[in-house]
Image (cartoon, rainbow, N blue to C red; front, side, top):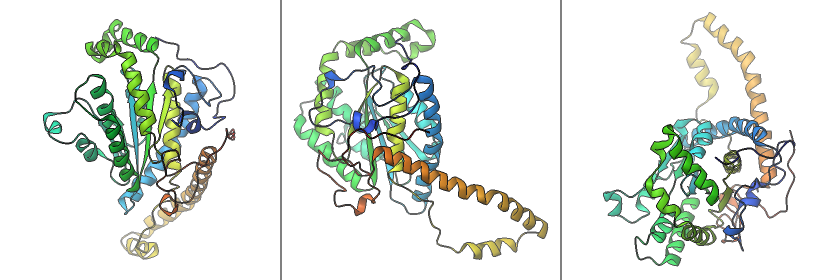
Length: 364
């Protein structure tokens, strides 16, 4: 397998917003992407893992707030789209990034070869049915983009590709307008590293089940797939649903980068705990009437110990969100209140970043 270590030494942290460095914009050239690079990160794989663990705690609470808001009438959700060739690390992203959050707040879908029922419908039919509901984080392992990648390279249908790109952009625009923050990541592994990972699957009995003979056929069309990815990325990276190209030869970096992008997406929502419509004190009196005096005393004692901790945790969470948004330079104005909530292709996405140059992060 390829080397999975990062740079030696250094203080771990993002020295530049990875969203700026990885986002597909004008003039993007996939051929120029160093698949073994670690853009924006100052540290090695060990420090990256430690940093990501910390982000996991933040992700978990932000996800819980999102879920709570969805249960109480909120309309926001997040969709993470993960694309990449075989062995690029899509499964690892699901396990190591989505795995840091509560499964009940996730909606994970994998899109393979369409079923007979799916083939009877428009190609976006199965995608619409899988979109996250309010309060959920949806994760797509492959997606509707298979219909401009595999379908194109394997010549499975006669398609006007420019028209299909416009159709996808319009579809994603409606999804974003409905309250979903869309984060699309393309994991880009080098041809050499892909060969090493496929060979490992053949060398190890515990990996044989992951090997598909068709993967070698796909690999033989490497250049065609790279060209299809290039065309897809530049035509479907929009203001409301940008693409981020992740160098994926170093698995630890890919997981770190996707974790940060998802953290930024959730932090941009700046969600508070939902307000209840009933009166707390009224319900407290009703509940107290059903409890024995000694039980009430115990509850008061526990509240005296726990409530100050909760207020402190809420304040710390607000500071953590502020720090994430500062690195990403997020406009704190709610997306629905901004005139640029649905921006032109060259603009930034809802939740959205202002234009800037390499802002330094605060090191903790």
